[in-house]
Image 1 (cartoon, rainbow, N blue to C red):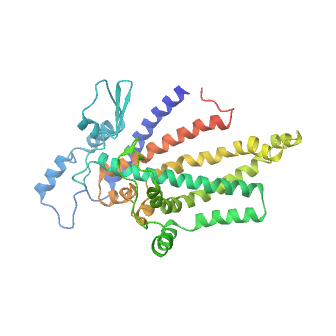
Image 2: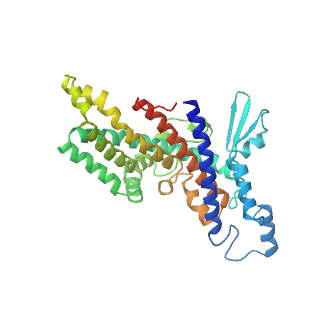
Image 3: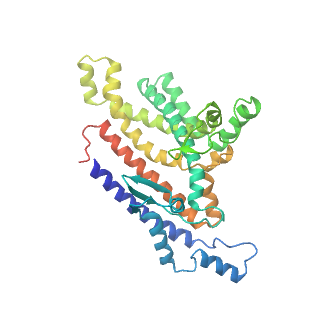
Length: 351
């Protein structure tokens, strides 16, 4: 297992290298630049800005700088200074060896903050929202899918799949304002906008003030963000369980006299979870890195808006950072999914 994890970490660096190359090529192929304005800047000011941000260098040198600062990890035996730690997004101490990774550099649009400063402030909020949305999706989708499969072609099946179709069909941009108006404006049960958790955060993202006020802010956006994903989980869980219960080993278990609840929980359910766990990997990466529409509707200061505004502003470091951050979460979540496979299916080995 250890060699498998190390090998996947090496693959992660290769993925980041390829993604960074494609992103760099695409962002520089789009017409315009980060300092273009309706009223053009004087030539000497524009030249100074490009020199300061190294945009006057050839493209291959600019990309080499990105790779050196962002993709390649750094190791040192001496504790880095606070300023050096702030330059890197990841700072971990492994038995006296400091591991530093991802220095995205300054933001062209935000003169007072670097890209890492933006991520440290906004990513924990998006992460908290994404985790709760994923929990909502699993809590709603799994029971609906399992009940629909066990009660196939009954009223329970029809109701469960109707809820799933509702979750897929109604977009966030419609469901979000409706819930805000009902529970935030008319009934005044929940705050219509904002986020309850404030820094500092434990382990970088866990809010220290886990009280009812925090959950009051999180209920509506987590539900809106999770209901669509729950529909996908429900339909996948139903289809997978229906296929598994028709397998020969399920009939053998029943013929041995095992009770139906035991057959489902011990034999059928565990194997039917493999397709569901597979989809949870990319779903987790998409939810925790920020969703623009949900954060905009509920006024949540997360990372989602930077996926859009960085493109409009031609803010190359933020574009690169948000895309590479999504790639990191995607690869790590898929690694976790592969490890879970070995638990769900004893035939899978990584040695």
